[in-house]
Image (cartoon, rainbow, N blue to C red; front, side):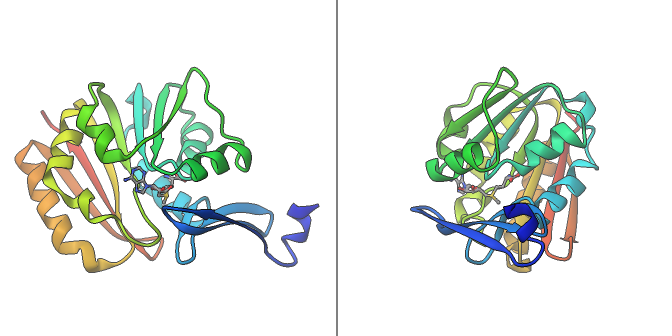
Length: 215
Ligand SMILES: C[S@@+](CC[C@H](N)C(=O)[O-])C[C@H]1O[C@@H](n2cnc3c(N)ncnc32)[C@H](O)[C@@H]1O
């Protein structure tokens, strides 16, 4: 019923989060999205943007994927439905409210192929010992990528956690104001034997960075 009504007008449920402010779970034109006040967090445009990035990566060769920034899990939906991904995914989010929304509103559940962790990505990457073939970095608070995610110590940890021929997909920004900081990350990755591609205005908005290890 809600799905049908949403073709006539959007239906929104609001939930408070200490990290992201008011979260909005919105049915619109028969589809459910997760938004903040100013940004689309999951499904909708965000899902299209990450799918575009994934199409430039050989996902079929990945055994282990790490997602930093679970949100409502739309990239997991893309990996499973569009890329027929059947191997292991570890997905992490700092916000227990968002993890609960992913489970109760977007039907995400842990199973032998999906591990969900509630932790700060920086803390997790500092102590991680596992190797991942693909790391998806999709960390936003509202419209901003937190400053620390442009820090080279985090990128050293990402490089160390990426397998020999692995890749990193970074959803870098909604605006171009992160371009300078992104330039620093690109040269750091290239110094560490990564081939990088910067994709601008993906779906009209976001900058994506794709880095492939040539170690
Ligand atoms: C755009 S959403 C992720 C969308 C998700 N990748 C998807 O496919 O639907 C960004 C997420 O990053 C999370 N986040 C922000 N800072 C974080 C941090 N320091 N550690 C872990 N998660 C964080 C937010 O709680 C939010 O859920």
